[in-house]
Amino acid sequence: MIHFALAKGRLAEESAALLEKCGVDVSVLKKETRKLVLESADGKYGFFLVKPTDVPTYVESGVADLGIAGKDTLLEQDKDLYEMLDLGLGGCRLCIAGYPARRDALTSPHLRVATKYVNTAKRVFSERGEDVEIIHLNGSIELAPITGLADVIFDVVQTGSTLKANGLVVLEEVFPDITARLVANKVSLKTKSDEILPLIAALKEAVS
Image (cartoon, rainbow, N blue to C red; front, side, top):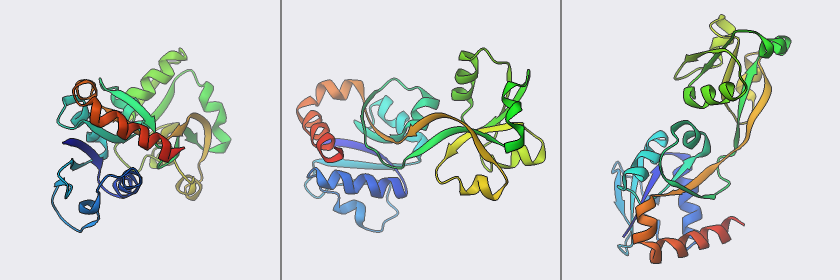
């Protein structure tokens, strides 16, 4: 049996639709249930429905053989697993954003950056040799520049409507292609290669 770690919510639905194109029986994922551990009717696949940020942990540990996680999560956690395929789902950008009149803030000698992507932000600004103060927030990141808590934010942007509603704009696109990626456990890729590799090939064809 191949075990998948899938993010609960919309991404799980989009992932299920893509897997179905590849011949995976995902009928169990279409039923309304509170169960978090599911099994396909043919017994070939198991599904763990987890928080998006927990997908890499389940895959790295080997509890799940495969998982589907956002590139932003993978960048932030830097887990020991294989990133196999860009599935092109849930496209967004990881950007620096702030007030349009404060573009000069990016050249400030001591920039204050609010983000939930602390590790990624540290790497980005460290590689630039910039001295920044990282302020960790878990939600409503856009509030930080408005209240003066931070100069800019480092966050995912999809439509940009939330930024616009709060008078903010994208100042710089740091990672323009944040999409869902298929990830694999390193051991599973060897021990279950006969089952996993054909599925990856089918997914690649479905995506292309």
